[in-house]
Image (cartoon, rainbow, N blue to C red; front, side, top):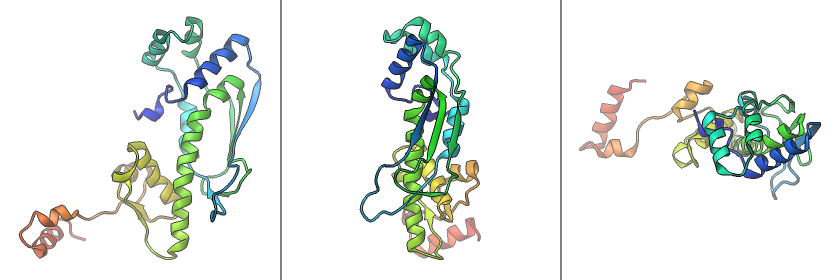
Length: 222
């Protein structure tokens, strides 16, 4: 399980507001929309991505026993609220753009309709997922536009800010038109073509450069 699948991967104020809604008996439907207010200079579009991960998060959102115990022991939350969280499930509706759709300022990418506490609580993680994947997909789309007809491959795992970022960047890049990735798990999980040969360290491990290429070719024939 990746950390992104944990209910406590959120901002504290989502939980404190959720308890306040619980205390006040506020369960009416609310509508939250995710959109961009403005674009940076020299940027005239964004590309929507991350919806699959967002829906997976909402469908599987649960508080585990260890998370409930931590909340109870923290002293910030009352027992009756923590008991209520044990049965917490997202019961709302989601309306969203199809992944790969270009969007513009003030245009909702994703809309959540749910009891206000539920809609409030999922805010941080949904922004996290949609923002990151859309950022990478948009950058990748610009690369594709700048190199028409060229094979572009994601080699960003080793420079990514963590495992989830590397995996989702491979997916978002492929969604935007890249031909594949070097990240093996992205190939297994998302069906993305995987590319890669050898590092320079492999060549340096041999006495002569041509011996390295010959040995590698024998080991990995085309």
